[in-house]
Image (cartoon, rainbow, N blue to C red; front, side, top):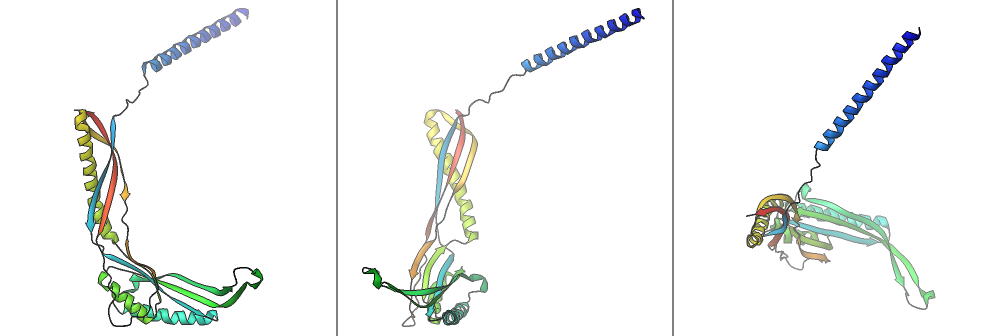
Length: 262
């Protein structure tokens, strides 16, 4: 019995020694492999940052008109009724010119009390705030590509009951804006490349690639003809002259070029 126990213990000891040796060899192998794989550092890139610009003079093809009707009466119902009558007549008159339902919409509508404030200076005990009625304001937005109708729209609207013109502006329609933008972007990128090449030539460098391009520099602005004007009915049958002027549209791009020796 003692001999068998001794034999079993000897076999177990050999197995433990073998596992220890194998484990050590495996660990050494892993360490050796890890040491053979060097860490890769990306070398720094030589770059030049340039802003390119391009400008185009274009004719607007979209007119936007904000006009409205303001009415005031002792009661809210009377003010509302008077406003509705004048606004319905205004909208119908504008549509009779060929402006479609898709080109006209309501942008603002308010009903508010009106007070007559007197005595704002000392003695303050004489200050009075007297309620005088209600004011109703209704604003229409007309947006159309029929630029030739701009003056006629104003005259017709005022003749039908509109007593306020907030603004008249000319701009580019989405389709024309996209077309101009595409053309300007190509030209501005070419301008950036040309400027970079002119700067690099004396330095013995050249463009070898592009790292990044920022295309966020296109911001056309509308041109306003009228802004916040009250208008009375025309005294004579003479159309209000509204002229659309050309716009200078400028776009810019920021390009970072990769450069190297010539």
